[in-house]
Amino acid sequence: MSNRENTISSQCFFEGRILRLRVDKVELEGGKIGEREIVEHPGAVAIVAITQDKKVLLVTQYRKPMEKELMEIPAGKLEKNEIPLACAQRELLEETGYMADNWKELLAVYTSPGFSNERVVIFLAMDLSRTLDFPMDTEEITRLDIIPLGDVIDLIKENKIEDAKTVAGILAAKVFYEDETN
Amino acid sequence: MSNRENTISSQCFFEGRILRLRVDKVELEGGKIGEREIVEHPGAVAIVAITQDKKVLLVTQYRKPMEKELMEIPAGKLEKNEIPLACAQRELLEETGYMADNWKELLAVYTSPGFSNERVVIFLAMDLSRTLDFPMDTEEITRLDIIPLGDVIDLIKENKIEDAKTVAGILAAKVFYEDETN
Image 1 (cartoon, rainbow over the protein chains, first blue to last red):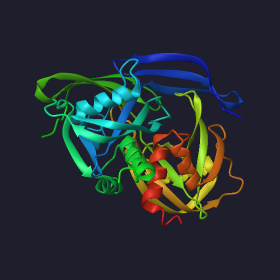
Image 2 (cartoon, rainbow over the protein chains, first blue to last red):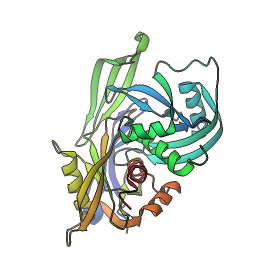
Image 3 (cartoon, helix red, strand yellow):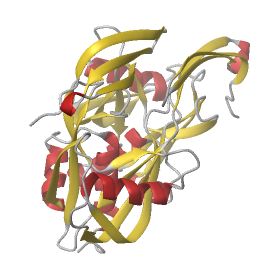
């Protein structure tokens, strides 16, 4: 049995540069009528970039919705028709000045499935090299930290890393790829 | 140095039952002007509920934004002035018919910090008991599965679990509390 929610009508309330918000009137199980407030998002990528001595690249960025800085793995929105891997390589370089020779898809997750279709593809990037003199995106990124994986796990446990994709990506790298990053 | 983004002006485009969408005009580092599309959310809770024989409660739900069913840990939005733990106890009972005697806060994460302030407090619930004849919320929940933690980890690795809070919560339970759930 599937509770598929058929759309009766749909109204768009906002169409911005990034987001589109619509409200769908839907038919629920048993014929009841419900409303769904939905935010459409173009999708994004994020990168768990791990050095050969098992350190993780983390960027700090001011996040307006919370009015505070968060420490996160490098990430960015997909441009139109952009392939996730190409986007991830671009974002890693722009945000950190690093390139990687070894890329694996680690996870793909919906960040807020209750109200948004945002999907983030999270990559594991290894065999890193620093591109000298690449101008980092300092308009967005305040700081780059390179921290041992074990210490990053501690930061998650202490709730000092508060970004869901970062927590999911780092823990997945530890649980699924710890051997390879050794 | 902090790239704090001061608000120059703010305009609300949508105010629904759950979400509020606004666009802030902000002053960036160096005096440039930018725009931030922001979705305000009341916040939520989620529950990694683990039985004494180390099985995890997972609910399946139709998610309109993706037009498909997702398997997730039990979760729900905070009601006005509701304490996260009380919300988690209510949602666990409503969605699964289970109660728990042992609650720990596992994580608190921002699901989409680039555009939303949604924060999910994820609890670890143990010492579970089934409340007989409690009417499960079948309007929302299609199915309840009770699956060994190791198999849930495999579902994450195979990308059959695609919800970010579920991935973060389950992996955190494994990495931080594996001993206690043994």
